[in-house]
Image (cartoon, rainbow, N blue to C red; front, side):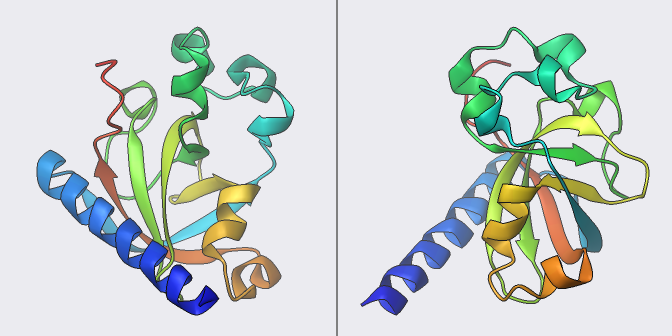
Length: 151
């Protein structure tokens, strides 16, 4: 039964990402390096300034429901705007090795040409543990509608 539940969750996540991508028609990239960062937003009350994220300048006062709806990420991927224009946007990120998918909110910038996922999000899509051992994952991503009606 656990396997069946996991398969249902994966199918639901993939369908949700596909629907969101169709609605937004967002930009995407394949085979991008994703590393992890120790934001631990749940331990700091989802406080963007405490995390010292680049986007906190503009989004620190967003409601808790907005800040906690998705896991956090820093974005410097090969496709899509960088810096302030990407702040607050959402990405559907898929581990290319396992197919596990998660939606994240961009709260920071980075400089390695990929994505820095909060370590908790990283672990959620690194279900085989290989990415954590290597220190990175290969992911596909596409921008999706955050579905939170603040824009």
